[in-house]
Image (cartoon, rainbow, N blue to C red; front, side, top):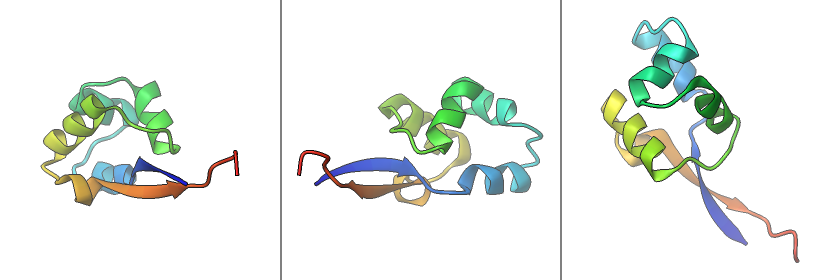
Length: 77
């Protein structure tokens, strides 16, 4: 089994609401990425180190507040 890091489910939507950000585009700009990358990561793709750092910095969150480690079952087994 392998592990991966994933953005906590629903976090972006909660942050948009509490920070009065009117679009995913606004969130992406705040992080320093584009909406396509944000959407891909919201859907479960592995974020880059730059994305993780930008996300945590933009919202003042710790790594464990924004991301979680998940176990991925190996297809080779």
